[in-house]
Image (tube, rainbow, N blue to C red; front, top):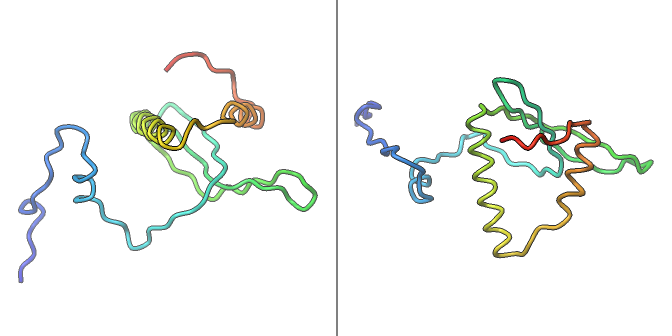
Length: 124
Protein backbone atom coordinates (compact mmCIF):
# COMPACT_ATOMS: atom_id res chain seq x y z
CA UNK A 1 0.00 0.00 0.00
CA UNK A 2 1.52 3.30 -1.03
CA UNK A 3 1.66 6.32 1.25
CA UNK A 4 0.10 9.58 0.14
CA UNK A 5 2.44 12.48 -0.38
CA UNK A 6 1.84 15.59 1.71
CA UNK A 7 0.30 17.28 -1.34
CA UNK A 8 -2.28 14.48 -1.60
CA UNK A 9 -3.32 14.61 2.07
CA UNK A 10 -6.35 16.84 2.50
CA UNK A 11 -5.39 19.78 4.69
CA UNK A 12 -7.96 21.85 6.59
CA UNK A 13 -8.65 25.29 5.13
CA UNK A 14 -7.28 27.89 7.53
CA UNK A 15 -9.67 30.78 7.01
CA UNK A 16 -10.09 31.69 10.69
CA UNK A 17 -10.02 30.20 14.17
CA UNK A 18 -10.49 26.44 14.22
CA UNK A 19 -13.50 24.94 15.99
CA UNK A 20 -12.90 22.32 18.71
CA UNK A 21 -13.99 19.66 16.21
CA UNK A 22 -11.48 20.88 13.60
CA UNK A 23 -8.71 21.00 16.21
CA UNK A 24 -9.48 17.40 17.23
CA UNK A 25 -9.09 16.30 13.60
CA UNK A 26 -5.59 17.78 13.22
CA UNK A 27 -4.19 17.38 16.76
CA UNK A 28 -1.75 14.54 17.40
CA UNK A 29 0.04 13.97 20.72
CA UNK A 30 3.75 13.33 20.35
CA UNK A 31 5.10 10.00 21.57
CA UNK A 32 7.06 11.89 24.23
CA UNK A 33 4.15 14.17 25.26
CA UNK A 34 4.08 14.91 28.98
CA UNK A 35 2.11 16.98 31.45
CA UNK A 36 3.10 18.52 34.77
CA UNK A 37 1.61 20.46 37.68
CA UNK A 38 2.57 24.10 38.19
CA UNK A 39 1.77 26.70 40.81
CA UNK A 40 4.57 29.08 39.77
CA UNK A 41 5.09 31.07 36.58
CA UNK A 42 7.75 33.68 35.90
CA UNK A 43 7.69 35.76 32.72
CA UNK A 44 10.44 37.48 30.78
CA UNK A 45 10.31 39.37 27.50
CA UNK A 46 12.70 40.65 24.88
CA UNK A 47 12.04 42.46 21.62
CA UNK A 48 11.60 39.13 19.84
CA UNK A 49 10.03 36.73 22.35
CA UNK A 50 8.11 36.18 25.54
CA UNK A 51 9.41 33.41 27.77
CA UNK A 52 7.39 31.66 30.48
CA UNK A 53 9.31 29.79 33.19
CA UNK A 54 7.10 27.14 34.78
CA UNK A 55 7.58 25.33 38.07
CA UNK A 56 6.45 24.79 41.63
CA UNK A 57 6.85 26.73 44.83
CA UNK A 58 6.59 25.23 48.30
CA UNK A 59 7.95 25.85 51.80
CA UNK A 60 11.25 24.15 52.64
CA UNK A 61 11.76 22.47 56.06
CA UNK A 62 12.73 25.86 57.58
CA UNK A 63 9.51 27.41 56.28
CA UNK A 64 11.25 29.50 53.62
CA UNK A 65 9.76 29.63 50.14
CA UNK A 66 11.49 27.36 47.64
CA UNK A 67 10.89 27.64 43.89
CA UNK A 68 11.89 24.94 41.43
CA UNK A 69 11.54 25.95 37.79
CA UNK A 70 11.00 22.87 35.62
CA UNK A 71 11.01 24.26 32.08
CA UNK A 72 10.47 27.35 29.96
CA UNK A 73 8.40 28.02 26.87
CA UNK A 74 9.21 30.78 24.37
CA UNK A 75 6.51 32.50 22.32
CA UNK A 76 6.64 35.05 19.53
CA UNK A 77 4.95 38.36 20.48
CA UNK A 78 1.93 37.61 18.28
CA UNK A 79 1.55 34.10 19.73
CA UNK A 80 1.84 35.50 23.28
CA UNK A 81 -0.98 37.95 22.55
CA UNK A 82 -3.10 35.14 21.06
CA UNK A 83 -2.50 33.01 24.17
CA UNK A 84 -3.58 35.96 26.34
CA UNK A 85 -6.88 36.12 24.45
CA UNK A 86 -7.46 32.36 24.63
CA UNK A 87 -6.61 32.29 28.34
CA UNK A 88 -8.91 35.25 29.06
CA UNK A 89 -11.80 33.56 27.25
CA UNK A 90 -11.18 30.28 29.06
CA UNK A 91 -11.10 32.02 32.45
CA UNK A 92 -14.40 33.77 31.68
CA UNK A 93 -16.01 30.41 30.88
CA UNK A 94 -14.53 28.86 34.03
CA UNK A 95 -15.83 31.68 36.24
CA UNK A 96 -19.27 31.42 34.64
CA UNK A 97 -19.44 27.76 35.70
CA UNK A 98 -17.48 27.73 38.98
CA UNK A 99 -17.64 31.32 40.24
CA UNK A 100 -15.18 34.19 40.40
CA UNK A 101 -11.55 33.36 41.06
CA UNK A 102 -10.43 35.31 44.12
CA UNK A 103 -7.02 36.24 45.54
CA UNK A 104 -5.56 37.10 42.15
CA UNK A 105 -4.32 40.61 42.95
CA UNK A 106 -2.51 39.35 46.05
CA UNK A 107 -0.64 36.77 43.94
CA UNK A 108 0.19 39.36 41.26
CA UNK A 109 1.51 41.76 43.91
CA UNK A 110 3.67 39.02 45.45
CA UNK A 111 5.02 37.98 42.05
CA UNK A 112 5.87 41.58 41.13
CA UNK A 113 7.64 42.11 44.43
CA UNK A 114 9.60 38.87 44.03
CA UNK A 115 10.63 39.71 40.48
CA UNK A 116 11.00 43.47 41.06
CA UNK A 117 8.88 44.13 37.99
CA UNK A 118 8.15 47.73 37.00
CA UNK A 119 4.63 49.01 37.56
CA UNK A 120 2.18 48.55 34.69
CA UNK A 121 2.37 51.30 32.13
CA UNK A 122 -1.20 50.85 30.93
CA UNK A 123 -0.18 50.02 27.36
CA UNK A 124 -1.10 46.88 25.44
